[in-house]
Length: 321
Image 1 (cartoon, rainbow, N blue to C red):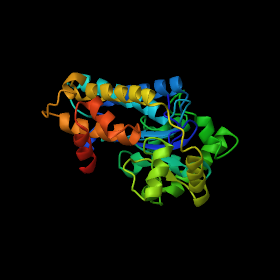
Image 2: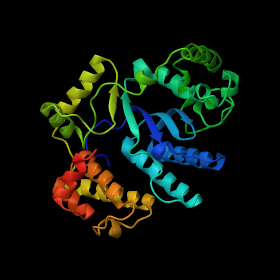
Image 3: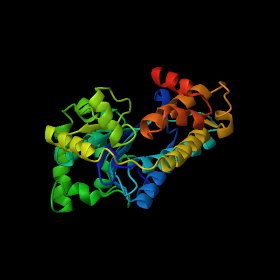
Image 4: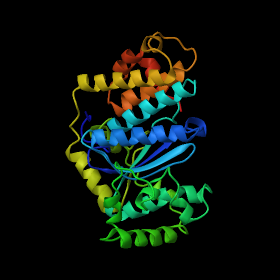
């Protein structure tokens, strides 16, 4: 369940970016790509998440989606944890597959929807994986082929996307292609990968308290929109700043996060909590410490108890870059 109102609350539009650790590949062949798309689609249908655009590259993924009733974090946790376990098993590897936490930008739909769809779907063409828009329509690992009717994908909401370009499928596709061609000459990477600097830190209450103290946030969530949109998001945060799930429920969720992280790193939870500093444990504890404090809103002491280290150790981890 969600931990209270936050930037991944249900029904919000997000541009999600997933990258391989140290820019490494997250797909080695088409079997991996098929598996990722199957998991992405199955999880979307199960969680009520609407997918509007996506593209799979060798070492990163872009998705435009609207979160379902459980919120974005629940959907992404299910997708990435499951795929990482599959990838490590299939390729006989251990350790993290993805670079830290996925990056998610909360977007103002009216102003940015069509630009996001175009930016994401043009990735293979800009990267030289295909040479023309005609070839892009046959690129099986992106939503553009779905919009053009070349690939069937029942979990992508093509109708919702095409309605932005026209009332009928044929004319909408023509207008969409014209828009893509125009967008080819526009560099929107900085515009669509950033935005306002309000980031989610363990629920809306932490967002507001950090803002009042003038502190910089540490996570990757951002807001992409005009002044009015950003003000409205902040207003909602301030009005509901006292809403946060009970600590018992946040602890339960954090322990699920610990178990999934340990599985991905091929270590046991018992070993993580043993105090050992061998192998991947120091970096794994540091990553989990940040999540415990900044995403789940737990105290330093409670986070330390869950990771088997002292309060001072958690404090030290948070200070280190």
